[in-house]
Image (cartoon, rainbow, N blue to C red; front, side, top):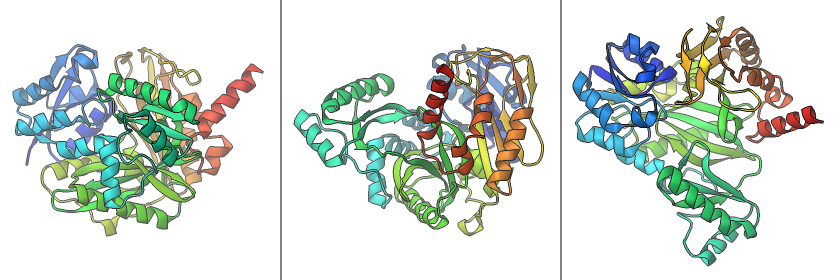
Length: 453
């Protein structure tokens, strides 16, 4: 058990964690960089401590400073949020060795699922369907690489074992491209993740991206909380997420959800996590597991009524899950739009000071943001500045409520991608539901071509 939590993050997710802690009567410690001393969660926390200058490499990514901050403030537990050190097995191991509680899975579970090769092998052993591909790392011998690819079939995709966030992957359409692609991806993987290991999978032509949210405690209980469709994305980066997934049968979702629970129990997983799948021709194919709370977790919270972050905290305290599988049901439909500080059409980052900030409201609307008038948006951190979530009795009602919310949302002082979201919500592909992961890039390409002609 613990009564004081250090929040090892910033921005909207740090504020989200603070709220969950307060709801459970827990004290909070905020760590912050010199650029973030005026963030709202820093002001609201019971205590706060500066851990370095603005660059994340000199503050939020310094494991030893976060551990020292916990020791100095008497925090017994650390919540990593997402990004930064949230899936760093070495950081979690250091927390465990310091006799502190990491609010998340064990370092061993993170190490297993953080490496895409070992994660895939664990899923195959648990009976979770995976994309056909190499059984492990791509071999070193050129002849063996070619033979492996022939068995997988073209087109295929080369992926970094330690990759994530859409980085460290390359599509190969023909054998003539293969060896060069393997070499380049290995080099990029080593530079970006410190791990040159790559593997290959069959490249699905037009899949959707559907994920399953799970929770597991220390008492052998695990549940799944429905699914999220995250197919509206650009360059493997999600923009809009929704639940339930349009057009996917509940029987299919039920089967894959139960398999995810089985896999959690098989690997001894504890905490919140997300199994990510590609979905094509009514079949699911596992691609990775995120061993942390997701950016899009509010979508699931809106349709299930479960406070996922509070459950994370309860589980880490050694308590059983507060809800059982038979009590989980999805009510209505929820959609989340990620609002980023970037040009809506060129996607170039934007910086500046917030001169006006008016969040939306109304029935079914939830907003997660750390913005305030006077907040300085810099290039030091991720461009995510707000999440707007709309819930309705039906998908159509959720879409209409989102349209109203976005028209009401005002963020002045720098560019945002609000106009992009407004346009996406009116595209026939999104309105119909069930579009694949490539539809948005195809739409944007056609849009640019029409404007140039």
